[in-house]
Length: 261
Image: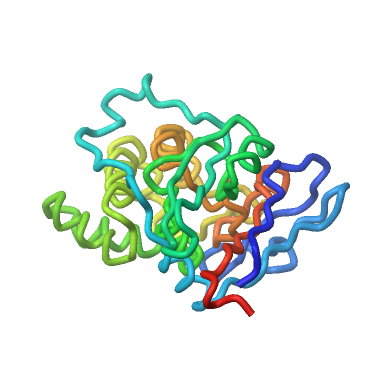
């Protein structure tokens, strides 16, 4: 596998909607695609393969994030996304494929530390390469996450977490998805129940009312705690995003020496 290429800034002067529409999106690929045309060039990430995902899962995170011991939505004032930071993979032993995660102030600081930017914003509980693999594989995470929520509507937290972990999330990442789902159910039940079966986008391209409520009421805490999102990782999803809000990151991590040509 080739080395990692990162253009971690969110570019100005970009046009269009970035995503990978499916039958639930409500937009077709004439209005939304995995390509952004910007004043300084085109951003079009590769179609990541199962081989790419296996490579990511072959890395071992040292000092992984601790499990959440409380609902972060209970104290939202203490949770604010640090968008000016960048989160980087810093290899500890490329031969053993071990790494650490660290937040940096700039791309230059990442290079000096010998790391690779994996998303913009500070690192969080979903910043691992294992969780990146889930985000790569599932371009429409809303569907399996919603399925877990419906299946466990009257179930226990542990049952709900087990369902999320079965998608592939590491335990701390599964926890913030669980708390996000629970908070959205509390705050957005009216528009979400009214919009059951609706496409993600309305005819005018705007996100539907349920998703807008989730992003407004639950999104800030989720972003602060999770660290990684599809948008700040440069990954297209079934939700189409304005190109000028997408971080231009291409994920290619170095192979171990025995895999090198």
